[in-house]
Length: 378
Ligand code: SF4
Image (cartoon, rainbow, N blue to C red; front, side, top):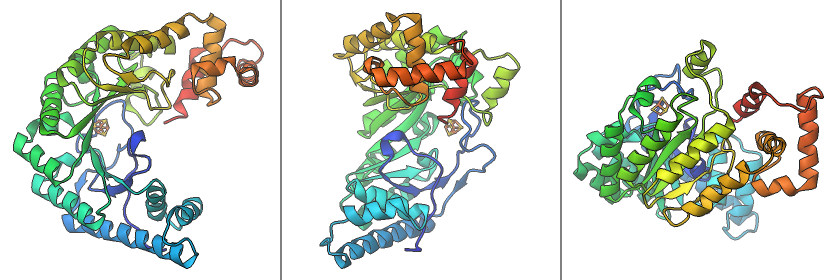
């Protein structure tokens, strides 16, 4: 099992069990102030033959796992062997293939930040080759930039869908132009709408990502309302939210240091999320699947679940100040996963002890400590 292939650094949370195939390296834009992922790395297109070679290697690893299953008496069932490889992998590529097989081996994610930038015929060739190599695949997805999607002709996106591209994950981040400009996102609300609509109209499923808290204390209102407006125009299949967390690999970190950007608190960000949800008039699935989100359980199908989602925010806001602080710390240290966990006395006491320790006995946690806890997630 010494076979290996190239992997990029990230994939969306919903692709945690996908086979990862690196179609391009890094990000062709690489300037967003809030994004540390590819900083210092040069964007590169990969030759199609090189990508195909990685796919062939993934197939060899898959076949080896299957062969081991027969030899070990599991009759070709891969879960048992896959779980052994996941726990002690010879390399990251084998671990990825094993994890993928453990989860049924049905989805593939094409890395890195914007595979759509490849020539359409070359990307389609890679997708077709994937399907030929792994006929059981049911879903092939990738990240893309709105600007790139807006530049593709409708026929090109249709060609990619017909080849087998099932879904694109696009970082909308915000629909408010001054904020997009300040963050150096390299696109406008209008380009987000054009790119997003083009994907929806091609029949490729679309997932738009929003960063809660991106407007800081100054632009939070416009960030919420204008983002909702753009999402209403696009009407994507999924809206996925994650909350701004900062580390010192981000350009935004310097903006905070020099006072140009003032971060919003968790409570302000929930107010912002309320405003966003209130203004959404689309038919998307709203998903909160990121560890940085305070209320992980704000999820649902729009428009019918809007009331239920807002009610969760009401519940949090109706808590006493002390309980809100307890919940925030509990979330940020990974003890709580949902609001109801506040009523688990064992967990509650554990959080109380952490607060006592972190605050050196004062039981008051300042925002800096809260941000520091959150920064560990990225
Ligand atoms: S386009 Fe995406 S990957 Fe590239 S810098 Fe911006 S957020 Fe990061």
